[in-house]
Length: 280
Image (cartoon, rainbow, N blue to C red; front, side, top):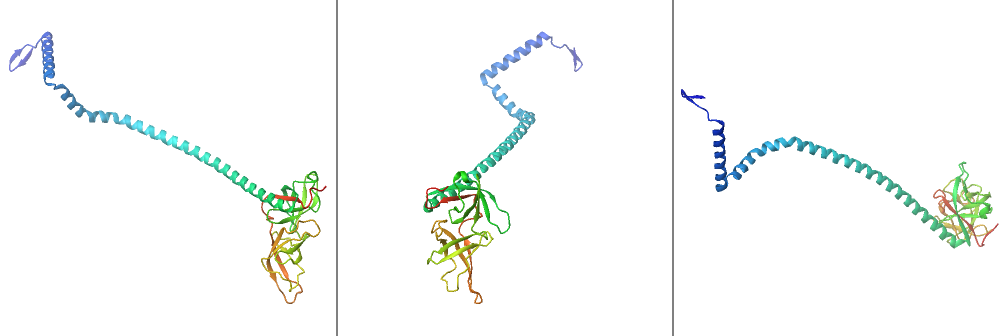
């Protein structure tokens, strides 16, 4: 019972409420079927509820975005490390290829030079360089088994390096043209003037003594091997005149020259057998 304005009103029974609700629902269904109002109501409610749904989904979306960002950063770091490693490997291979190309170029130059001055030649690698001051000697990996002999010329693609002075079974020692104890007969390429080039002990300088002030020699002149004595092939570059000092109180000129061979570069030289097919 409900007291309304002093009058007692009985509450509807459960059956009555059920009948009323069913009738109300049926009425709504009929009205919706005829006027199609319910989809409009649902659309309006959906608009009103969307901010609530968006706010409720925001933590999940933020968590997903952060996880994706971290995963992407980790992937990028791993990819960057991998690319750096690959780059280092490629650079190492590139350096090796460049070194091989340079070595091949030197070997081609050596062999090309050998064809001009010798019937037979062999490429030898340096295994040791003398560390004694004012001594210019090298050791190469060719010896008696390769038919190397004392006095054999040693050249590179640019000029005469020296000659073999000691021969072992597997290795040999060569004295360079810059060694103080070495001398080689040469001619001036410009006019055929004969003279001798001596080593000075310096790695980049030889001397041309015993020429008088009347000698026709100039800075820049090229000195080539004369071929006299049969040890060196004739006409191969030896040195280029770099300085001429004329002293009225001296009987001879003081002449310095720079070796044409690259004595301090590369690790290969060429042993040649000039004018012969071989020698034991």
